[in-house]
Image (cartoon, rainbow, N blue to C red; front, top):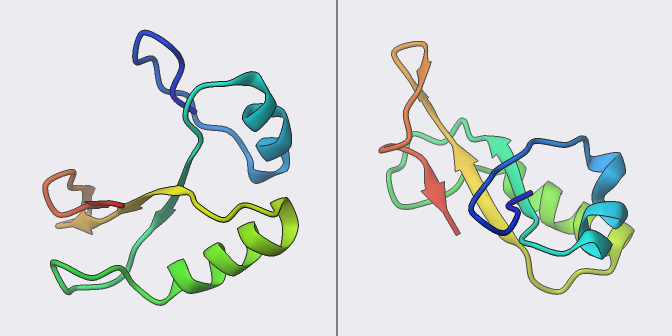
Length: 80
C-alpha cells in the first residue's frame, strides 16, 4: 500500500478491502520465479483471477519481485 507522500507498507491479502477503502495505491506484489526479463511468471495469472473473483477488481497494479543471487533484485523485477 502506497500512502500519500510515497510511504510504502506491506499488508496481508486479508486486508485488501480495508486498504482499498483507505485510499492510496494498492499494489499486488508476489515473488516471481520467471527468468524471462520482459514477462511475468505463471503465478500472476492465479493471483489476478483471485483478485477478480474475491475483490471484484478489474484493474490492479502489480509488482513482480524477482530474486537473483539469493537477494531481491529491483532491476530484475517487473512493475505492471
